[in-house]
Figure (spheres, rainbow, N blue to C red):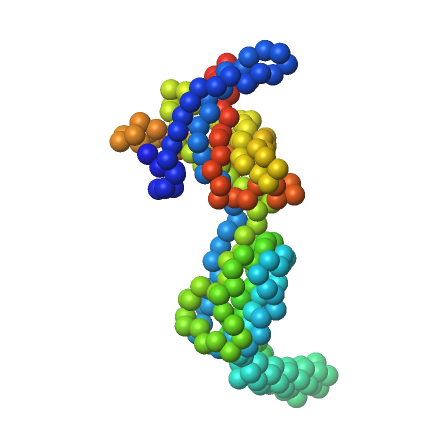
Length: 249
């Protein structure tokens, strides 16, 4: 059986010593993965005009990572803005005349109000077209891959960058329900993973326990989440989940 299709499952029983007493543990092999990990793609085809960040840069949510050529789209935004401002000015004059002298028919006033609302919608649509030509970070994270260069033409939906937030990670495994069937979401759990200076043991919480057992393997899927202070763990490595026995609170 594999975790996520490629990690071999190895289960064993171990004894962890805490405060001088032996506490039974069920240890199971697991795969770590970042909680937030996305491939950013282009929503429209176009030529890369500017790249604002490089691989390895940490960016905040909403940061523009790169932009396509958008000169004609920006000119259209300006045109729609002028059109909206002109109609708004006409409406303001008409409303003033309507209030002061009642020289403007109400029907004409309503027509002008409608024209302004339509102009606002058209301006928003033009601005949305410009927004589609920018690749924006959906969350805080590090750019781990940037696969394009300035001047390169990109087709629709082509992968452009990978953004990863590794400040926390999940450990996913398939476990024996006879040994770990007592687990519940929110329960404390530990993971041991290799780090630059040796093995790292981190505390975490169970966030998912499958309600079904795989009929082929007889195992059930679980997922636990862990904070990753200082990015001590590089998500993607294999680790060992330390599952307390049923008797451990």
